Length: 422
Image 1 (cartoon, rainbow, N blue to C red):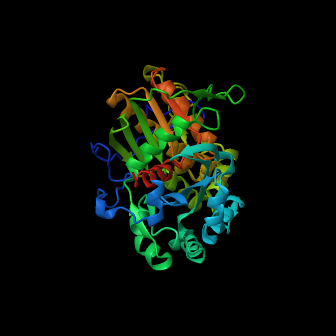
Image 2: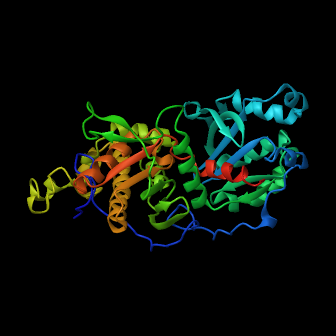
Image 3: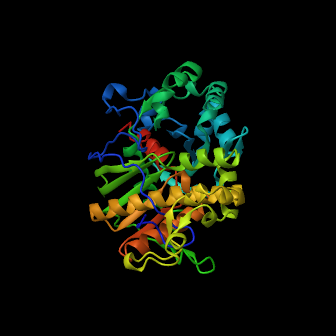
């Protein structure tokens, strides 16, 4: 019986598989528990080739991109300069104008590409240029469409290299060169994640706080977002929830390690929902979960004890066994697809919360920051994580969230681009 999930109708049991910790500073083997290819360190010979005219300006040529190619989503950040002089505009090549217009005048690209307009950072200064930072995402399976677009817009005439992170920077390296004539400058994803988080938190969110926590997460009427200042963030536990999960202990901007992870992440939730409900998009899966009742699927403490298990402080509505009721044919026949989606979301979320809590205790860290695209439009999981950490730690732990969720790796890649020419 689980004893460390959150309390409430959507509480959890269970722990799941734990991967052995890997203690490293400033580099790691990737954000997912099932670690991919080893990350190579950068050398001067691997630096991207820049156009000669950029040397006079002591900065890379436009356009400025950062790319994070994950197992489920590709995240792209684009810096749009807003301080272009008349002379610069006159000298600007048509390809560059075309790319800027295409990216900034659309909110959707093809069937699946989305620019998250609500996340746009305005009047941001980077490397002495003022502009807006745009955040774009599309499914990894649509990467060929992106490569065709890059080829059509002759991107390689402007850049010969792209700064990219994530496992896809390795997996699709040959495709970038073959289709678009672009060399990928592969960057360590943990380094990029940390740099991106610290930078975006430092600049804020258009005058507002980037970081927040949830007050009264269990009460739908009283729950509210409370801004939080991460001005002195160290130490913190950073939980990155993508297709899988990686948990990092961050002691300073240059001192961090990957503590552990789990393969049960956002990809698990979506994949299981596709199997159990027939849904076809992450958004559809979350919509179904919002309408379901997980207590019809899970076996609760009260289903076993008839009430609370007082000796260990487990209320009757805590989950004793996720999906435990599905052993009964009668109960299987009575649940809806929405119930199954909700139970899947609760199971995955609370497993992550349980592991994060144990890591925080082991590392003696009381601030836990959750990031990653799993949390996009996913208030159910945020509330579960917030309540679970505070309840089971008796108020010693607090869950924090960041507005830009899953874009920090891409931001870190952009920052690396902007430091290639000094």
